[in-house]
Length: 525
Image 1: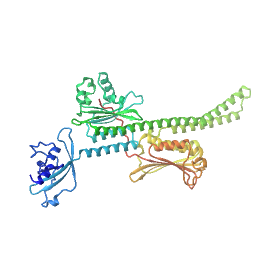
Image 2 (image 1 turned 45 degrees about the vertical axis):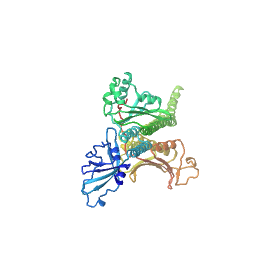
Image 3 (image 1 turned 90 degrees about the vertical axis):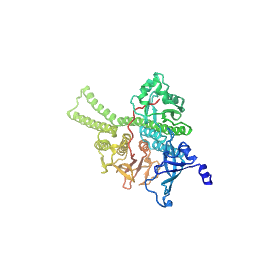
Image 4 (image 1 turned 135 degrees about the vertical axis):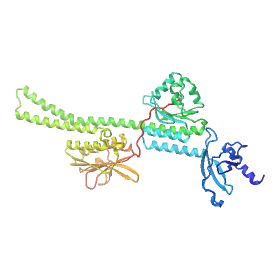
């Protein structure tokens, strides 16, 4: 054996010769091992390396393929491998020399890191919970080529599970009821065990156990396809408490090791963060609703209650005069009737204004713009302040945005308008609404500008604000406005323009896509 032959045989990388039909002609021991070949039947065996369609150049130097290519290879069930390879021609035999190496693990690590990064980005972008968990389930299944994946969450009372993200399996709206039926028949639910123990469980050969167990009959039709083997259940833990479960169904031939489990744990952590963030946002919305009710109670007391009390006292005064034998004159009755009519009109205007402010902008038939126009018209009629709405001509597509986002925009504008009427001593207020573009990103801009008295020292957090500068305007209402904007990555700024008055400006990035539709349940052991 020559020195060159010894080098080829002992080389750690695969070296082989393939013909124009991409079949092996010869291969060194490393290539035989990597491709799972029969050492005694290498010649004629199909190779994973596609050969170029173009004819071979006469000059081998110009025919060399620069740069590595990659190809996937499955020598057997569940044995998927990826090779990085380089081809070099062997004219005039119309053969190719291929040098290749196994990059399966490195590429898998790259895909897993990318999947974790995508999941983290989805959580940070504050998408809907269903949209985030659906994307996460798809990413887990695609990254590790799994047969199926589920992400389930625990409801607020802790007595039901809901499938919020799924990949691979069909869907069934009565999934949880079927699962409980299996449990009643004696089926062992590993996912509930993992949830209770707060640690992952790995179960090999789970498919056969499930299909042969009559206790799983209610879910056999959903679990049968696609074919799977090993099963892993990883609890979602937020602040140490279980909030859901991630189920992974591995394809036949796949084995769950340390790296596979580490990837599932990382993705389960991202899913738990998404569930926790969604719960936190719901708590914030609940607090905002309580604060709105408190504000409504204050407004009713300050306006409607006092005016109704005044009406009651005026009507009672007429009764007192009659009781004392001093019937009111027609002029006195006309005056009281006039006062009662004026007070009733004021009460009606205040109540209509409150109804408009309470009406959810995103759930009205014509959307945000219509709700704001109604708010502006009613406020102007109720207060006597000239309030107008100015809209950008651009087709902004606001009606297609998330309902909660539109509701927060409406509430911010309504609060700014309320403040302008109540505190600014303004004669005119202009509400502007527009969608502007910054590169490819869209931003919604809403501004409420008045010609009132402007900012005073009490309106700003810093006593020495410049006349045309930003104000860190304090107060409970401003805090709520800024919190609403911050939920969507937006800002609220209060300015005193050089021309006078006050301007409250909301800037909000608009998401590029809509949240997903809530998913129905799917099957899981």
